[in-house]
Length: 344
Image 1 (cartoon, rainbow, N blue to C red):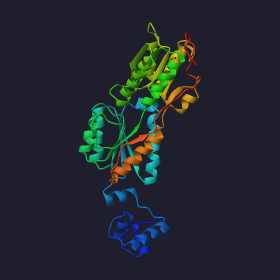
Image 2: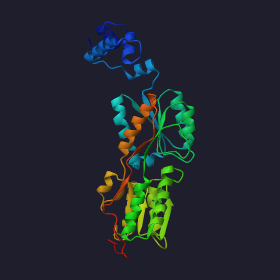
Image 3: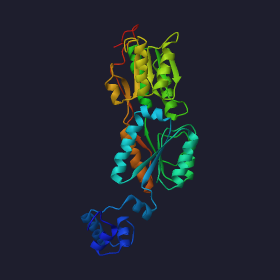
């Protein structure tokens, strides 16, 4: 036999028809157990595996999952979350023999069109719903499209889909408590977009923690999550009449940009300004000073979301999944403010 083995080769070796081989390989009923085992054994001996195209045609499955991201590509390029999340997804899909279909679109209108197109063309078996927004229209749309989905986080409205969540508020709260314990009373938060649930959630956690810790001045500046906008927000804060002595950023790229802005302005970090990030990205460990940050495991989040979505596609009844909460890791970019001594 030359070249790649075919379904005809398996049928000939097992002494059955090609149709019976297809039934056995796709785990369909109507094949006697001993015949199924003979077919599977023949396939293993020949090194045969059905092509993705053949599997799709025979089972009406796409053997692919969809991820649509409505963000500027410039934001994605500098965002450490999505590459790690996708790596986690791929670790599960590779084992299951599935592919990830990624679509990056510029706005929310294009995003909804992308969901309809992928579903209408039969290109995916289900969706990952990320960057949840207030009253997110994708929940109803994907339900209308009759495809399984998993949401990253809990929507703010009823949803038929399982959620895989990681509590990020605990990390923000710990960052504020850490800074307050060092003596900071003027703390700012460079937040993400308020229309995104995780952006507003982190903002609310910051304000609640600042109030609980007795922080006298708690400022919030909203951004689009880019490093450039993080730099803009930092300049705005530092040029104010009463600048903060510490800044809590909603992601690491903005924190790193803020660190650069401060250093160019001649402000020493952490002696004159403390900085914390959010992501726990590897690059933050190698900065000078190393970046204190809220550590998350986006790869584990992606793997968990993929497992849940695959189970949903298989028709399993699922409950929401809660992952270990994000945690704050203090490094070198935080210290007592110049005008205060640490209570410890």
